[in-house]
Image 1 (cartoon, rainbow, N blue to C red):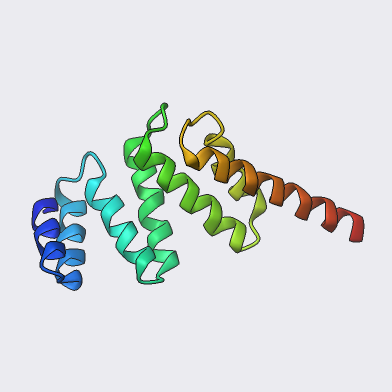
Image 2 (spheres, rainbow, N blue to C red):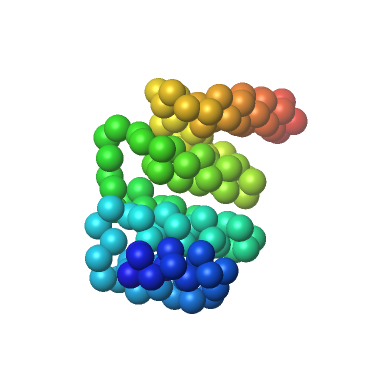
Length: 127
């Protein structure tokens, strides 16, 4: 479960930690802890698609109206993920959800939204 994953990480056994988190997701990850930790590990390993999949699942599981730290982290990651792939509409949706959040994610989201707007203006001017 989640605890086993944490123990494996402390022992610097990433592969076992990832397997433990995957088992926890299938069993008892109601708070989305394993999903979020697995997303971070995938992101650190450069496996962006897998990290995005986990962060999306985390947001689906928590379905929180209020954005807390873990949800803000997921939204910022997903916004950046979609922006980097040229899906500016989806990126904008994730970034917009952070505008009411008080953390540093809000400022990063604002900057990314400005970048998206400038890309859209440039694309419209060229088109």
